[in-house]
Length: 125
Image 1 (cartoon, rainbow, N blue to C red):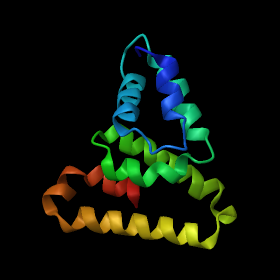
Image 2: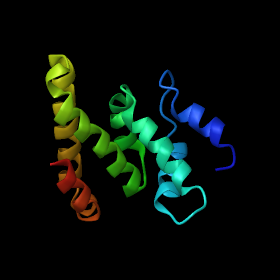
Image 3: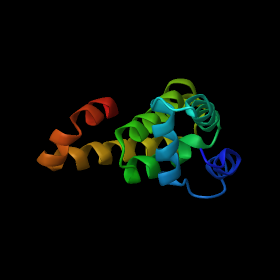
């Protein structure tokens, strides 16, 4: 990472919309054999553990291009569903259910997209 501190500050600023290209580059660094891998992994863990991270999952899943970034977002959402579901207000739980249902429908309505994203759709279920 060229400027790790600036990238971390930008990614962890939850008062702003998530920077998808930045997140995708960090996910790529974390999964590759680079000298910055450990640093990228630490930053992703900080992001994932932030209490507001799950609120950006919809933007990540809707805008991300890389499978790795989409899986990262699903891990965040899975953690919220497993460990914080009961503490979420009803309207947020309904919002999550509706978002996931609509996403699955979108992927299954387009056969070419479904074939391309089959593994992703299975993970959504």
